[in-house]
Image (cartoon, rainbow, N blue to C red; front, side):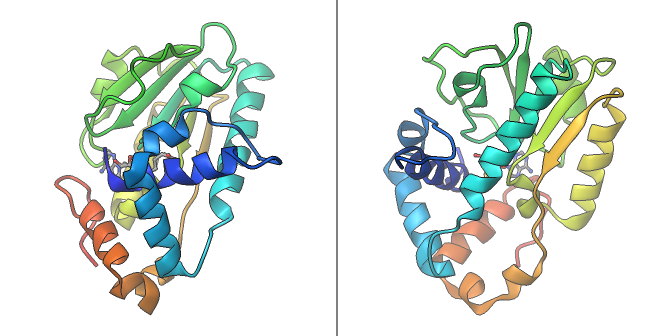
Length: 215
Ligand SMILES: C[S@@+](CC[C@H](N)C(=O)[O-])C[C@H]1O[C@@H](n2cnc3c(N)ncnc32)[C@H](O)[C@@H]1O
């Protein structure tokens, strides 16, 4: 699993340990491991400190996802670039809910029973991932909540457009998409260009099929 996935899991672990946590992810610390803690420390050293955006993003996505599923009757969730997202394990989703987790091949948290149907889908987001999603049981005639928490930052602008159009083409009426998008300006900042951390991120972006040119 990628260093970036471990990094974000480490941020969720830290938030979960706070007495006034925005959410509790009891799996995040184990999933992040020492590697995640190390990448988080390097990210914060490179960027000037803790990024409060990360826990706020997770809490906001949790709230909108739960509202769509409990109040609006959606039963499918697709995590684009799932990483160590543990929503299938930590959220109370309605009966019949299925969480599809698209990422490069990996096996997170498999020894813990999920709280809903959980279908890992090993596929690249810049490849042709739609057949794999449908083979895993995704129903394009039923609404879904699509979640792109973080991965768009690792894709080129054309790849982001293609990904969102492809998701839209599989979205029945009543579907939602949750995504966060950074501008490209932060990639040009000296702190994010020059550090060892920045080199690690560039490697994550330039893996085969990652769809993003190294900066
Ligand atoms: C910053 S992590 C976020 C993970 C997760 N959404 C979360 O919030 O914890 C980005 C994830 O996107 C995945 N990713 C990036 N580019 C990808 C690609 N081209 N195909 C599939 N997954 C990709 C990485 O493997 C990583 O797990």
